Image (cartoon, rainbow, N blue to C red):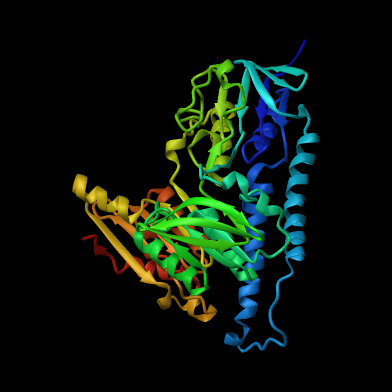
Length: 463
């Protein structure tokens, strides 16, 4: 026997719950399934808890710098990790409980807890219960990748999820991976008081970013006492007494890094390997991402995929936008599509990096391959009054302009408030207006954003 619904949603990340509310409000009888924690990665192990901890780390750093601002510290700064974790748990739990209670109180919506698996294109089993629906939406998220390194299975290690249970200060945290997760946790725990070593196999940090961005972030981390080992391959792990030893190779030379704890931050993979997608006939690519079209439809009529599992974006904001695209097409007769989306995101080291559109590397490639004429403006944060006043002058901002159309191609703001300032550029990009709109705008003083028009008045050809 099966229970019929008009729609089934699998997963309660950033796309599933708002879609459930929209479909239910439209009068559909729906089921939503969650196997673990309501709210998905963002609420439980991603954005909300980690940025709460970043805030604690920022407070610790600012307190330690008090004398620079004329504030004398009566006692040495210390961090109570149990209180840091308790604050993080309280904020994260509030969001988690809000998602669950909201779904359970939504009319026309039935919540099931358990692992969902397809039995056919329109049948899903949760434990002993079989559900059917003509429309099925996947919002199953992703998880940490575990690299194939000898000895890793013989040591205790942490990933981005298990780091959320840490209520103590690691003596020496070894981090494998020099990208977003590794860098945020590395700076965070260094500010809490840990010794930190980051191991990156590539020649620079965060390789998707421009070289000047990578170099500036490297400098910021090193200034705070973080050891960064670039071009370094981890060949073996072993445990000796209370220490974990990472055997590494750098430029042909072997060495050892001895630490107390290891964080694996080498990437993520979609949660698509245990859904029974083969029984539904849903196509995935070589990396396990569900293949979707511009409106997030899979190759099987009546099945959609949203969020991290479709490979179209690994961020909370792209997942939520996936919901908006699906809802607009299904309910609003509004043909929205993924290709309308401008790539944008932030890296929450301190100072943060705000990014939108093309990188300088991509722009230079466009110049080389198509003869496109590109202008660039760049300004160090040392020349931004707001940054000087706050004593946070690391980083820079830069913007790329199509010389013929005067449209903004991309921008990066690495500096205090960069995650917010980037939006004044992003909104002009979405409006498809020339850069002169923002260049001629009058911004509030003193802010970081007020220097964007100044930067746009100093454009030079990208050589």
